[in-house]
Image (tube, rainbow, N blue to C red):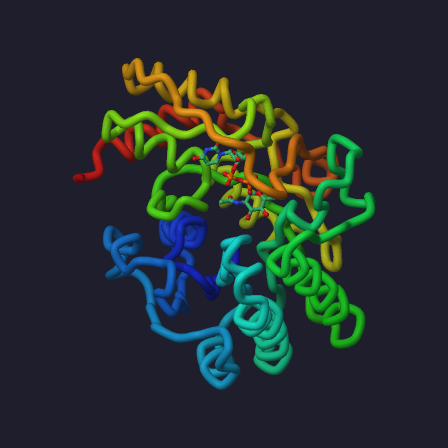
Length: 313
Ligand code: UD1
C-alpha cells in the first residue's frame, strides 16, 4: 500500500468515498478540491485525518506544491455534467482538459510514481456494439466526453514520453452514498432515492426500457486502489462497471419497493442524446486488476437507500 497520496476532487461524491477508504487503510491523504461541486460536509467524519486544501486543478503551482511528497495521485476533479459541458465547452476544457494536463505535468516534476485518472464510458458515445470493450472505437458526443478522451491520451503520452505511470478507469454509471441529487442532470439513482425519501413520484424519460450498468461506489473505490498498486497496468484504459445492466423502469421498481412507496412514475419524452443501452465488458479489469464487483445491485441500492433515508430534509 502507498504511504502518501493526493485525491483531486476529494470532497466530491466518488472522491470522498475514496478518501474515506484510504484513511481507513492508514494512508496519508491530501485532498485538493475547489468546492465547486464537492462539499466539505462529505469529508466531515474523517476531516481530522486528512490534509485538505481548497484549490483548483487549473492552478499548476498549487498542484506542484501539494504533490511534493506524494506517491500516487487519484485524479477525480472534473466538471461532471454533460449538459453543462455542452453549454460551456471552454470552461469544461479549462477544468477537464487543461486540469488533467496540469495534474500530469505537476506529477512529472514532483516525482509522483503513478496517476490514476477517472475517465468515463461516455467516450464510447452511442456506437451500437455491446457490451462496451476497451478496444472498440470511441465517439465522444459532448465536450465532457471529449475531455475524458483527451485526458486518456495525455495520460498515455506521459507514460511514453516521461515514464510517468498512468492508469485510466472508464467509469460506467456510478451510484452510492453522497451522490448529490440536486440537479435535474444528477445520476438517476440519486434522483430516484431523493424522490422516494420525499414521497414524490420520479420522472421516467422515454419508455424506461433504456438500460445502464450501475456500479456501486465502494467497488469503484476498490478498483482505484488496485489500479494504484498493480504492476503492468501502466498506460492502459480499463472499463469499470459490473457487466450487468438494469432498465430505468426496473430501477424505480426496486427503489420504490425498498422505500415502501406506491407512487407511479410520471412519464416524459426521452432526453435528447440519451443513450439507449450501455453495459461494460469487464474482463480487462478482472485480468489486470483482479477486480470483481462485490456489490449486487440489490445490496448497493439497500445501502444507498439507508444513506438517503437518514439525510435530513
Ligand atoms: C451517465 C453520466 C454521464 C456519462 C454517461 C455515459 C451521470 C449523472 N451521468 O449519463 O456523465 O456521460 O453516463 O453513458 O452519471 N433518467 C430518468 N429520470 C431521471 C433521470 C434520469 O428517466 O430523473 C434516465 C435518463 O434519461 C437515462 C437514465 O435514466 O436514460 C440514466 O440517466 P443518468 O443517471 O443521467 O446517466 P446517463 O445519462 O447514463
